[in-house]
Length: 218
Image 1 (cartoon, helix red, strand yellow):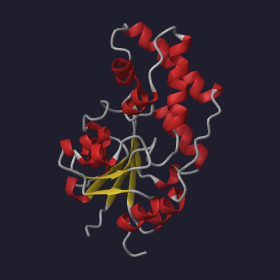
Image 2: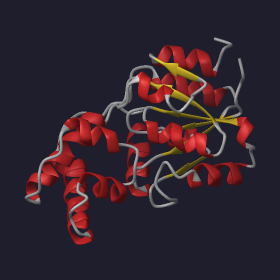
Image 3: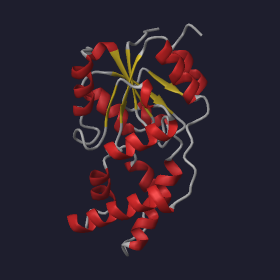
Image 4: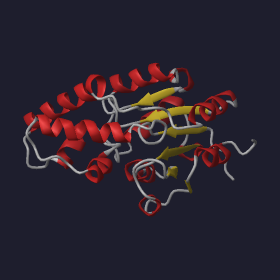
């Protein structure tokens, strides 16, 4: 089993159980903006993309000004108005701290804005564990691999040293685009058969299994 020096994690649906809050806030934002309310499945399919890209896919017939209003409404609900819990998945924090203590380089590649990412890193006290992070403000939206390329360049790793861990096809497609190994996790938005289409090296059904895979010395 290969041991990776650099482990890059998606955030929403991979480390944090935030999917239901994202769905709720997106549906409420659509209501406020008097637009058709997207289904839960439709919203889950765009999780991992930047908000700008997500709005284009969910509301393709609307103009950029409407998309910007949707983004503003969504942000207000997510930060202030919606109280759907967003805990870290059980077992995530001890896994991350153990990987960090073992000398693994950890990074985040997410569709969240940089401000949103920094907020949740502060709230979870996880910021110190990551050597770097990239969000929607820093690079093109997934599945474009630019944010992965930036992380590799900044930390001076080759693509063969790293693995991308994510719950969506956007995460795995991003890794595949530059020949990086990926690991799919099933507790987020996309089903195993969808993740398998992007040829991950493994698909994990529990945090415990992921922990053992990333650190086989347990």
